[in-house]
Image (tube, rainbow, N blue to C red; front, side, top):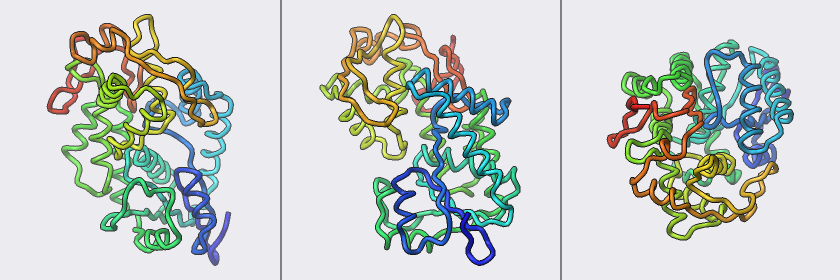
Length: 330
């Protein structure tokens, strides 16, 4: 680990592109650590140990996306061990965007640092700076310098809020996220918006689709049938989600599974190395009926999905027209 004077300085980032930009930046004053996880996707539970969580998540990603479980476990174990080895006197700088993908990662890391007793934490917060979220990861040296100058120390009350937010996110009752939103002040600048987006991933009372699925299926019906084009369209529409190609592929695979698929996929759409194959997508007759609200996705197709600590296996939780999570009838 690199030191500045007698102090270890570590910059933790999401994404290899930003990681490489920081390593090449002349103003870099420490070590760059790229964190590789997707906490907006896959199983989580406050009942599991770190080891159990790594194992269950690796199995999920292998089943849903074909990512080798052993490789996922190796990366996960290495990251967790490296976190625990950070000297408590270190200064840690967290570079995370304000989309849902990055904010869930930030919540996890702040909660872990709180439990490990690391207190010299700083966040890159682009608040007040004119910045397009799509720029994140491709900044110029001047932009990196501007961001670094505007970094802010993480206060104890922000660490406490991160821990309470992570606890709500891991709850088996999604209404705890709503309660957290209603009760908590904005100490962490982007968590509230990220949580509101998170709730949009719950099935609707209208047809059982979440907002991303509904938009994607609508675009497929309009003729956007290539995976890369569809992912680009969804990403433009929902810039605050930070929806990765892996996550989007998993959503589509879920809609195409079972004996009663809503989407038919011809050819591979997203592979282990992250490359996108030009698989073709089309709606089935059932998919068109669900999209129009004539049938319900969960009753007709089923569901087996995780949103934070909520394991959806039926219509037990729905998002109503006002955006609130309510108990379903199933």
